Length: 139
Image 1 (cartoon, one colour):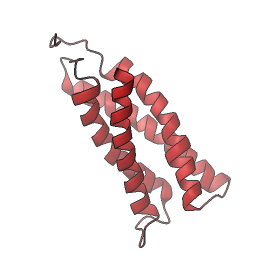
Image 2 (image 1 turned 180 degrees about the vertical axis):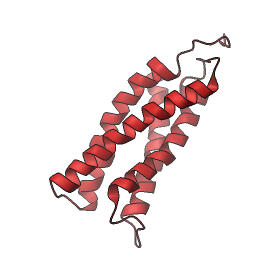
Image 3 (image 1 turned 180 degrees about the horizontal axis):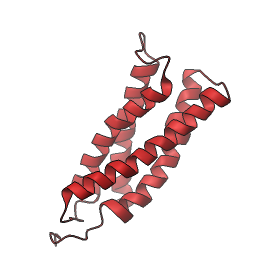
Image 4 (image 1 turned 45 degrees about the vertical axis):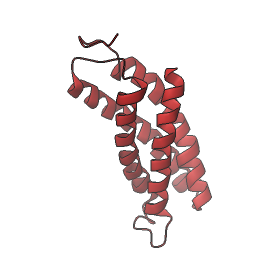
């Protein structure tokens, strides 16, 4: 059940990420057209907020911890790794392979990068963030 709920939240966060990235980098006028990796990172920040709320309130709502601040800090740290994975795949595509179209950016950053980052996030969130090790378990 958690995997399905994680997928729903991830889908919503993905739409937020994809939309923000394309507005920042590939719209007309695109404020970050010359800086696609920064655009992807900023889009990742937006989707991180969506993902935390969804995962805390829906996916892992039954895993209450005693420290919300620890949960948020760990979530943000691990999500930064996920965003870095996506930014890395976009950077390789853009600056090493010299693919600079909207399609190439979206495949490298929003398909391959987000896909790899999602695998990391699912594993790490369940193991390190929403652990349910607190005193406030729900029955």
